[in-house]
Length: 61
Image (cartoon, rainbow, N blue to C red; front, top):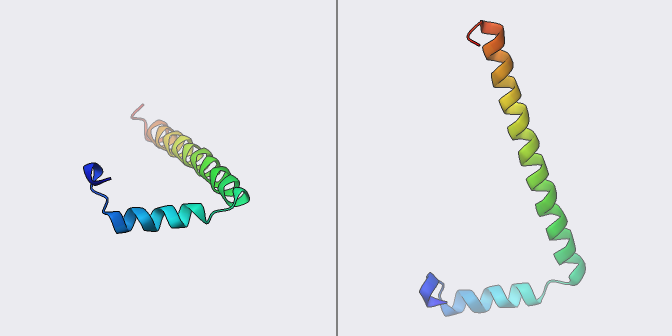
């Protein structure tokens, strides 16, 4: 762990926290991570679309 700059107390703390997670918590966390990725992509797509519409409306396109 020292190779990546994590101290032993931090490693122990993380292991204790992770070991304490129940399977349903892990599943919920994965589901939230997937949802987060999906929403980030949606925001990115909408932002790009908005920029394109702005350019088209201003005649710069």
